[in-house]
Length: 351
Image 1 (spheres, helix red, strand yellow):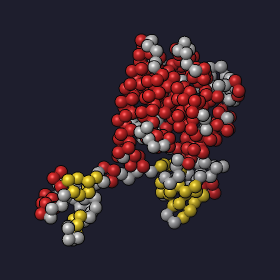
Image 2 (tube, rainbow, N blue to C red):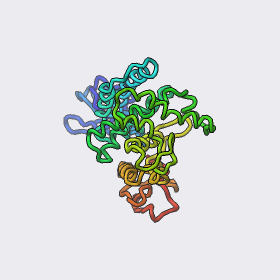
Image 3 (cartoon, one colour):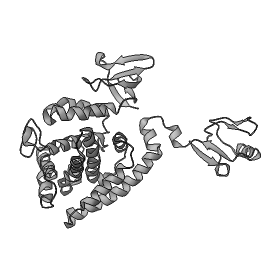
Image 4 (tube, rainbow, N blue to C red):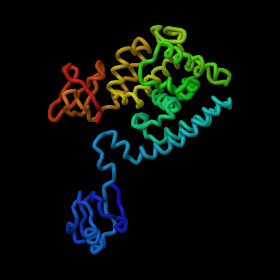
């Protein structure tokens, strides 16, 4: 709700709270739609200010509540300003070989990060952004830097390492800026030729930044962020300790960002689907200790959320199950449901 002066009222606005006269008589009840006659009534009773409903009062889903909130609107404004600055820095480098100013990049990170009270809120804001089709590659890199800062805290890294991880986020996928968007964002399945072409972005990116005097971990993250502990990655099919730990961190960030960002060919995955995907292969690919910490934090962000179950009922998430993070304890009406004991049910949406 918002408070407006009486002179700013117009017919069609909806009253947010009961309006009383100075004698404590109810003049207009809450939820009443204003008319010219009612506004004149307020004038006769010398009512100076009233509460009226704004867009956030009509929000029914978490997405709508976030999108309509003042905090998100401020975040989106700052994000768009910073996106323009970030894009210019990257275009200047890719097309004109002007070395990126790391201080300027970190200032961009700081400006956006200050728009959210917590890392969890920042991820929520990013999750609810509506992407611009012509900025998807740049947004992927900027968002990855922001996510990297949150994940660094979740992993308990020292401040200096978190800064390195954020810097890795800015640069690790820069090689994709040398590839055509129609290849990177193709809706259907890539051919073998196209997939091999996409995979060149790791070596292209490394060659682009290797002479910029960046931290060695940033260089390695750019080259190795698609390497996996089980040897299934690329470009060199490295295994285990042969992979820079920051590259593994960025591999997780990269995967998370891809799953939680809207694409023209699919909606964003809900957090429980993200966890499910990580559970399926993450232990072998990223290392159990690293991925488990991230998954637990993602699951904890869903506490208190209202979700839809596969039988179309709604429920509130009460407790996480550490051994089955996609199957928390939920409350459906007066019924408590432990989803670990109900294999016939699953969470299909966050409301």
